[in-house]
Length: 298
Image 1 (cartoon, rainbow, N blue to C red):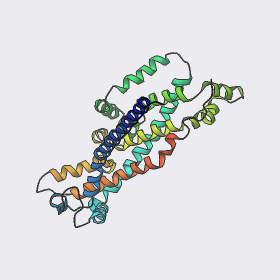
Image 2 (image 1 turned 120 degrees about the vertical axis):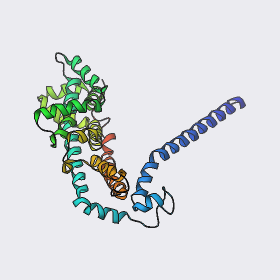
Image 3 (image 1 turned 30 degrees about the vertical axis):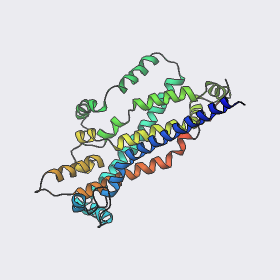
Image 4 (image 1 turned 30 degrees about the horizontal axis):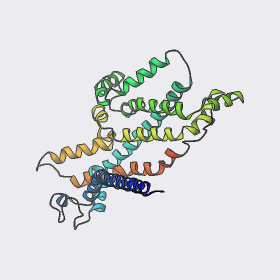
């Protein structure tokens, strides 16, 4: 090996190390950017009203008075503990809407990917077209439709629109086409399995990563849903946590004559993100599990 070759390899190794350092620096900056709001929320939730605006150590560090437990206690008693009712409502809307949207998306995506029927392309293009429509643009027509059926100001006004997920259907179709071999399904049919048994025992285990992804996205979307519940609901006992905390924010912004509950808003917001964090932590293993399950050599 001559000296020129050695120098070329050394230069290439130096460039690779420089690229890795740059990528690591970029990732570190992105982590700080995304985690900074979470850190601020964690710090703010431990402060009193006075500490939020005139804390001894600034807005991004803990105050001398650690008031997190006191704030949580106030959440239990303020307005009769309505916060916990809002949190329970958010669980109902998120879990109910997530399960319903995932079920429909799985069946629709599987049908579009593995069955041939008249108008399949037209129907799927309609689903793709629905992806281009902002959900906020559909709130007013949805409210009018719900009014005609007399179900506004009920849980159904929030749950029913959450059952439709065009993106979930699109994602399931793409996943089924790429990861669900037709040969395996044909083998199951040859062995005497019907369509339902093939779907449940053969297809669903392979679709687990995509199902988990669609479920999580649906749950997060329902949990963070604000505009639709704020339009179709007027009973405060039916509010999700997003609308309820916004009502407290409006009250705190009303001026000096109104009650200031900023400490309850920050503490309530912190508690409201914990279920989503736990859901991602406990379900993330299903994202990678089964990605290669059922793969065959064509």
